[in-house]
Length: 209
Image 1 (cartoon, one colour):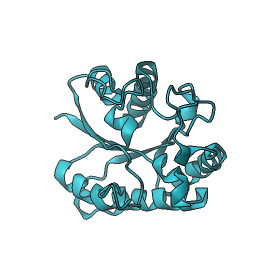
Image 2 (cartoon, rainbow, N blue to C red; image 1 turned 90 degrees about the vertical axis):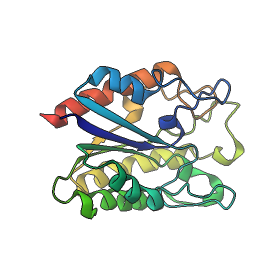
Image 3 (tube, rainbow, N blue to C red; image 1 turned 90 degrees about the horizontal axis):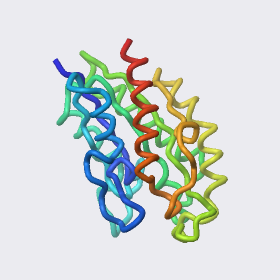
């Protein structure tokens, strides 16, 4: 039986191409690269959405809150062997006025949804919490609502290992496996998708054993 990996995230999971705003082909997105690397014994489930946050909805962009949809997706895709959770970048937007502690608490709430979901009690998946990539302040294309949020992101990174430990989750520090320079200040290049997929595959294989 194939092992299922639910990959739940925002635009970098969706595969946003910073060159033109389109979507990378499936085989170039990190989820597609991961599927190729893991092989036929795994089923990688791609659940990325542009603008997705942890618990917040913008009036002009409804249904972006992960807390609203994650329980439904878990029920839809179960049984699951792994859940990869990578969110937090969009919560840094200045108009949300969220502190690093607020965002870490919201990520903790998402971990609690996974660990407490009644549909997963009989066969709980292994949870992997991934640190979100932060805005690249050196980019001239960085949107104004992300400007001057780099330090907030750095403070958030310090809090996330503790969140992972609280729920017995694996933790992947994205900033340690790829360069933190982005063409538009936010979104990954093809090479960054490949680097991340390689790092995640190694972690999945370790967690599987």
